[in-house]
View (cartoon, rainbow, N blue to C red):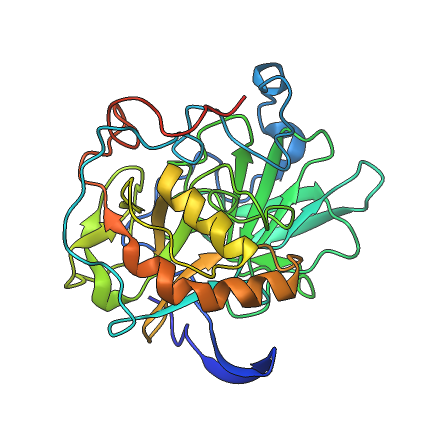
Length: 336
C-alpha cells in the first residue's frame, strides 16, 4: 500500500456543506506476470484488434465490453444474497468520486501527437507510445488515472500514476473494448479495466451496466473473489472481499425523492449490481465513480441520494464465472 490515499475537504454545493471524499487505488498483493518485457515499446498497433467481434449497433467507446462481460451481464432471478448489511451511514460515508480520484476518458485521433510514456511497473513496464490529445489530463488526486480510447475505437490505453510533465506512469494496461474488461492486469487493485463500471457523462438518467465501487478497509474481507485476480486488502476484517458483487435485491422498495441520477443508480444496482474493485483510503468512504466531465449538479444531487441507496446493497453469494450475476432469467435485456 502506498502512503496517504484519502483526504477530505469541505465544499459548498447547492447551499449545503458536503464532505468531499477521495478514494484511490492501491498496489495489489500480487501482480500478474508481464506479457511485454521491460524496455519493449508497446504501441496501439501492438494490441490485437477485435473490431470484427464488436457487437452490432453498440458503440464500444461509450458502452464497452462484450454482452457476456460481468460489466454488462444483468443479475439473474436466482441470485442469492447474504442478509447482512454491508454499508450504513454509521459505518461509512456514501460518496461518488467525480472531480477527483475518478477516471477521465479521452478519445484519441490519428492526427493527435504521438507521445511516449515510460511505465515503471505493473503488467507492461517499459515505454509505451500512443496518440494522445494535447488536452488530455489525468484525474486529480494521487492516483492520476487516465483512459485513452484508440483512434480506431477498438481498445483503451489505461494508466495509473500518470505524470504527463515527466512522460511517466506507474502502470499501463491495454484493454480490448470487445473483451471482458476483467482479469487483464493491474490498473485497479483487482485487475479490472478502469472503464468497467464507470458512470459515463451521458448516463445521468439511465445506466445499462454494472457499477464499480470501492469500500473502506473496515468493510472489506480478506483476499479476493472472481472476477478480481488480485487485491490490496491487507487482511481486512469484514466479509466483502474485493471482487464481490453487491446488488439491491429484487422487490426492494425504491427510496422516495431520488434525483434522476439517483434513480438511474438505483435501477443499475437492482438490474446489474456493483463490483468491489478497490479499497478507499484511510477513512470510511464507500464510493461509485463517474467521469469528471459528468454534469456536476446531477452528481451532487446523486451524492445526497447515496445515503438512502447504498445501505440497500447486499452481497450476491452465487456470482461466478459460470453463473454471472446468479442463475435464472436475466433481470434486464442483454447488451446488443
